[in-house]
Length: 284
Image (cartoon, rainbow, N blue to C red; front, side, top):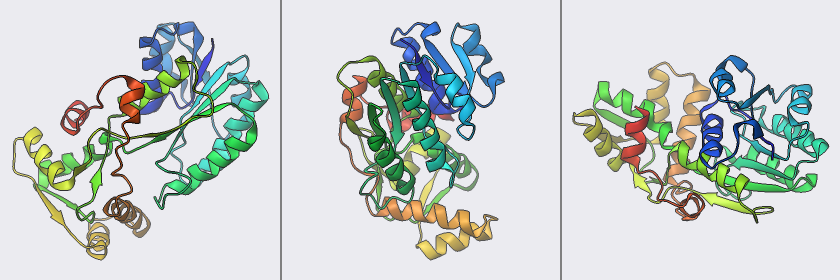
């Protein structure tokens, strides 16, 4: 069995490779792909095959997928380029005749108002129409997304957000990576779509108290309006577009779009998801 993991130079892709190895997949049966092969040298030393994979260069995809049985498509982080990059990967997988493509999507991508959902919705539609056997993992929020927030709180003693009383059912990247490894190495996964999230949905008061515990200092959650949040971020040096994007995500959280706890991630990985405290502690 040959499994290609795209984006293996990134955090999630690397963890997927590690999960496959722990699940007993032979290193020689894994192809770890990314744009910078130097970042994959340690995996090569462990017997994992490495390959240049650039979502914007179809030739690299064709070469990496030659002879592959399965592909893990880690969604692109390049805003505005995601859909064409994803379709290039799907086309290459179709041409290679892979038996399964696992795609890391977004929560309720086909119906959600989540600011990140449209590219994922379009990708899912393209994948379903492509004829490539697929499994879709709609990943919820990563706990690691708040590492910078906690680090800033170490200096300021505050966490400022416009989320109101919104909650986030986050899990550690390693949890989501283990789910990818699980669906790549177990039967009966073709055609399934999973909604993945952490076991517990926390609010930002809990985030502040967890940060305080980890940092050993007082941390308060300061709830602000969207307009004040945007103005504050611009005043701190963020450009208007980035400030609007961050505030848009906070609005999504306030509206409950990241609060759903389905239990499906826990079931796939066969253990409880990583707690907020443990996930942050490991990442700090």
